[in-house]
Amino acid sequence: MSRSEFAKATKKAAFARCCRPDGIPKCEECGQLLRAGRFQYDHDKADGLGGDNSLENCMVLCSGSKTSCHSLKTEQHDKPLMQKADNMRDAHLGLTRKKVKIKQPPKTRREPRSLASNLPPLPKLSLYRDAS
Image (cartoon, rainbow, N blue to C red; front, side):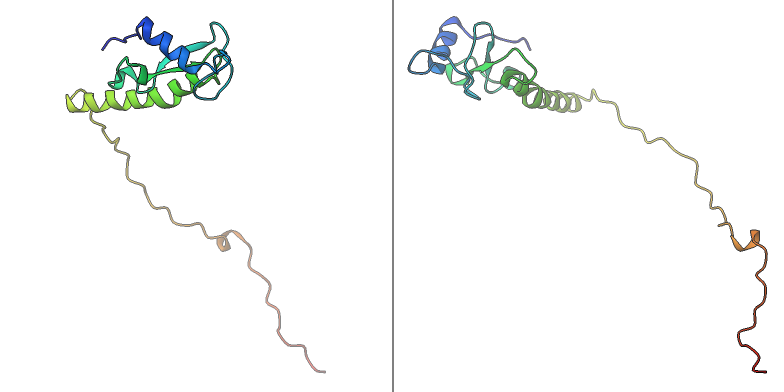
């Protein structure tokens, strides 16, 4: 399935929606001020999971670092869901390999070692003293 982009009119409307009343744009997720070239138009419901290119599904998110909203959403939310969908589709089509359990040799029981056999015998002590 090919990835689809938002229309120019949708991007303009989403950008206008993310602007504060004074006209300064902010991230729709965390509220951080957006700089030129440091934001992305992202699908709220991922395109690969059936999300459309409507204004309601378009989010303006900060980007440019590994801790940005766009990176975190993509890595922690979208990719795992799309991977799961791909795995389910492959399983449905019979494209997955069956997991084979590796047989291991049976465990042999060893006799526990006795510590007493390795030690010299203790000397015999009398329990009572002679009263003489």
